[in-house]
Length: 432
Ligand SMILES: [Zn+2]
Image (cartoon, rainbow, N blue to C red; front, top):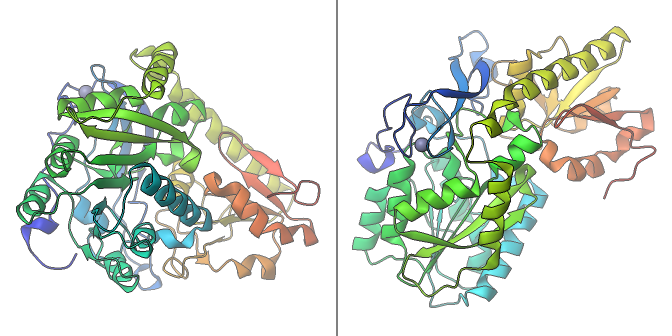
């Protein structure tokens, strides 16, 4: 973290063990994933002899508003503490393409041009806003990790190094910076004080402006057993029903929603000031009805998830034990946050996986937190020719299997762990 100004500190968290939205005591367990280190804290070679901090990873569901959340609070300065947050969005081709398509669509729909103003919360290295810059639309990024903000500046994306909060919003309003489009992708889940955050967005948004936010859809997490997307940096997991309730409490109306394939199934919500003229689309009512039918506002809907997770662990270990007994070599692909939840919860270390690879040079030559599996550049796979490549970022499996299709030369196969172990043979299946 650069500087000691108060703006770079996150707002205080709500009291532990109560719902971070409605304050109800959290009594229903959703899933207990044991304890693990923070998932972005890769271990550099110089720290191999040092201890790692472990935190409990236990998700609860609120029996009042049905917000799924972690009960144990980790201060975000721990997460971004050294200003060297390792996640650079620009290292995924499909995510870059997704951002570009979004900018094209939203610019067209809301007529954004030179006289508009766009703010992105958690703008990372400017991978999305750079598309607005190309179109001549003025932008501002808000990004707590200073190394990401510095990378953004090189793309011509001005960024402020701070967490977004109601206080940040007040300062921007004082400067006359009220955006026509306020967006945040994969940030809502990371917010410790969701009330302060959403109140800040309402304060900041221009009267006729539009908010769009993308976040993984809880309904898909449950249906497809994506328990590895639960990690300390993700405090909250939203259904459409619950997120609508949170926004409504702060004077924002959700007028449209899209279901996206990203991150295993995400929602993109469109919000405006309660009294703004944007017409509410039929998709809003349809998704609410669909969630009601599933039972998202009943405790039963959440009750069976934990056992599904335990069974997935048993299946993955079964596969790995059989592979190792048969003398096969297994390596990983990717070093995403979700991979660490999977590996640490399942107790998979170098006893099963020799190493993993990642395209991001910021991750290479470090060790994964907890499991201490080394991270190399992808070329390593072509040097060592392993029998199996376990895909940790399974949400990008098509992209990776196509990039890595060359493993068929020595009979290598891909293994996808979620929703449950599946083996793909690239010599018989083609990938886009
Ligand atoms: Zn609640």
